[in-house]
Length: 268
Image 1 (spheres, rainbow, N blue to C red):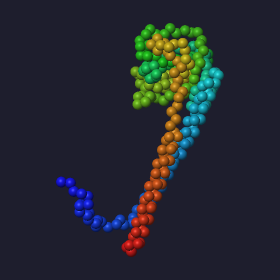
Image 2 (image 1 turned 90 degrees about the horizontal axis):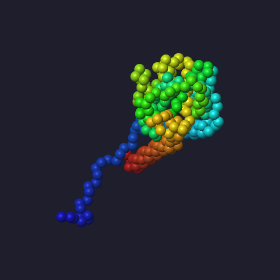
Image 3 (image 1 turned 90 degrees about the vertical axis):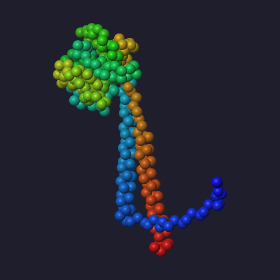
Image 4 (image 1 turned 180 degrees about the vertical axis):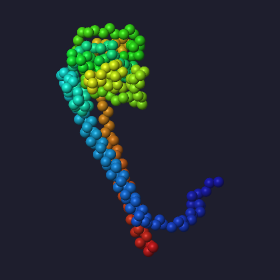
């Protein structure tokens, strides 16, 4: 049977005593924790702002290099001074003989599917070699008859890319089995019996060619030139969390002040 709300018995008054103010040591510890969290979050936010500036500069730099006229690929005397910041994505060209007999396939995933990058050394007149990523092929390509090489010099044009580390994402290169997941140029050279000192520390991502079927020929011009730039969102997140720490500290301080005033008013 339902009863009317006004017929319900009154709730007994709580016998629980009012909260006592926190001790000085507790307040000091809470203040230190809040200050530490605030400092860490502000540091992370500032770091993301710096990363944002770096990423925007990188994007602008890549755009200017990619669309600039092709220049000669760095010569052997310049190799030691090359790094990602100064060299990546230069539009370069080089001339030499493609050594199909020293070719290496590196596993890759592109918009055309899963397959391989075809890395072919370009032997220059001085005996040095530049690895050329001639493009992407599907697994069926490697089952076809070997390419017929030629001793005629060719000109290669594309984007300069610095060599990669010893492995891909979650997978390490297996040189003995000739399985490659990254373009580790010295390791590839050693596996092919080439003196690594003769191989440039960069490779050339060949530009687009007439080939359009990765089952029959390498498809070039697939260099990814878009860079994710979420640093502004990350920075806002870290600074917002830092602000939340301040708000939380303010709420605790206000409640503590109210409790102390209530205690003083009650004469306790």
